[in-house]
Length: 410
Image (cartoon, rainbow, N blue to C red):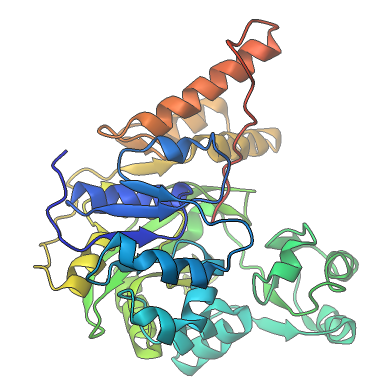
């Protein structure tokens, strides 16, 4: 792999699997990448060669203060700051004026980004721009929820309005599918004392494969630099979870809808929208956008010839925008642990055989942690798996037994 050929470095706010995917895209195109990491020392992402330097924020130091302090060390000419998690997007947009003097911030209008981080704001913005959405109800109290429980059509999905720190302390799921009023009220009471703001959304029937997404790179002038449309193969948990496996899809209408909606709302840079196709009428309904950062399965676009983060980087630093050449052979992206769990659950329900699972994973395929020129993370995963197997069998493990790094959507 060639050394950096661009003068302006990039700082990523996390080196999780999402951040690893972004780092690899940029690294392959000659960009010097730095990343923050607050996770365990044995995280497999730390074994990547795509990141020049990993920064650890001292305990107790505010994220914005830390970013302001290290910015000049990373690059004198305003490095590009790419958020990786919703939490970092919220903190950075809130301090936009301060950080803009130190970094290039590619996400667009911070007010628009904050609106679309909120489930309540998503519904309002989508309706204002004529984007179809499932029936959605915002609640802020037990009394509100009791009224919604009588009105909503079941099954339904319960989510927090925002992924707030208060909600995180409850340990509740980020999204729950609920079958009746009693279960809806019980799930809400599980976190409402800490975070009463929630959203109830009608569940759209259909399979995991009916969930589509459109990843886009929007220039600072709002023009579309590149796009990729895909669909999920399986989710974990099934029918209401993160992407376990996915691949390209043919739904060109989603490109115009996604780019038009996000650009009109004031969003720029890396962004995406997730939709579900309603089998009752074939319509694509907006489930949620991801703004200010890349999505969990962002690497599926790159392995199919669309380097979303690099297109945004090139636009921000004024480099030539490369011609996008989609791969001739559609490639799937698979997160093995999540996909195996999902397949096992479907097998228990009698909806998927082992042979059917294997057939769905036929090549060409790219495993989430694997990269032909960056094998460190995959080797770390394999080594940890072998140690766990050896421990289970009572065999020597050659030292300590690092805790398993749980792989979760960002």
